[in-house]
Length: 307
Image (cartoon, rainbow, N blue to C red; front, side, top):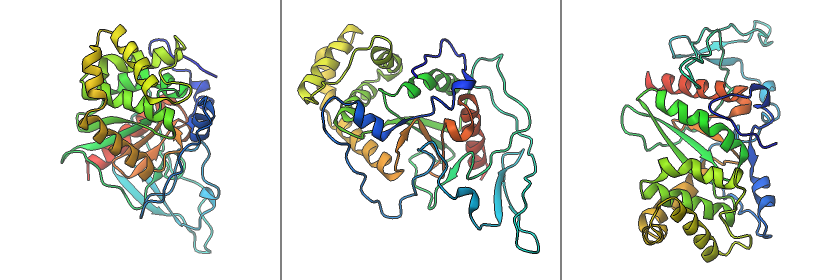
C-alpha cells in the first residue's frame, strides 16, 4: 500500500486507499508488546471526528433540519432544510468555490465545489482554544513519521505551505500513541527546537520509508533509540553533542507535553488529520482526495479569517 509521490504528482485514485494510519496500526507495527496508551477523557473535549476513515454512524440520519455551507465569498450560511410536513429537503444547492492551487503553479483545481459539514469536515463542539496570534488562523497537522500516508501527502503539504494565505499559521504535531511513537516525536521536536526541522523533516521520512531503516529500538529501549537517532542526524551534518543536549532540554520536554495534550484533546485516532482553528477537523477521506483536502483547509481557514 505504500506509494511515494514523485515531485508533486497526485495519485487521485489512490487517495482513499492511502487515507490514514490508525492508532491500532501504530500499536501493531511496534515490535514490542507495549500497548498503546489509552486516551483519558478530557473535560468538554470535542467528540472523535474524522480521524477515522468512516463517517460516524448515523451522521446522515440526524434529526437536524439545518445545513451549513461554505459560500463563494468564504462566509458560512445556515439553511433550514425541513419542509412543512417535517421531512428533510433531499437536495443541496451547489456553491461555486475557487479551489486554490496545491501542486505546481500550473496545476489548479477550479469549479463548483460544495463543502458540506458532516461530510467533508466535522465541526468541533465546543471549539477548542488555539495558540495562533490575533488575526491568524491556526491549522494543525497531526502526523506520524512511520505513517506511509503522511509521507505520501507531505510533498503536497510542503507545496501548499509556500502558497497558503499569510494569515494561516501552520504547524505540525507528532502523535504519541505508544513508546515508539514518543521516540519519533522526540526526534521531531528536537530537530524543531534546533531550527533543523525544515532541512531534516523529509530526510526522516526517507530514512524510514525509502531506506527502510528504523529510527527507534525494537524493544523500545530509550537509550538505544537515542543512539540510533544521533547516528542518523550526524550523517546529515548535525553535531552529536548539540543534538544530545537538545534531546533532553526543557524546550523539547515542553513541546512533548504540549503535543501530547493536543492529540488527546482532539482525540486523534488516525493520521494525517488536520484541525482548522480549533473548530473543524478534516482528512483525505472526508475531502475526497489529497489535493481537495488542502483546498478544503484553505477555504475553511478563509471563513474563519473573515469572522
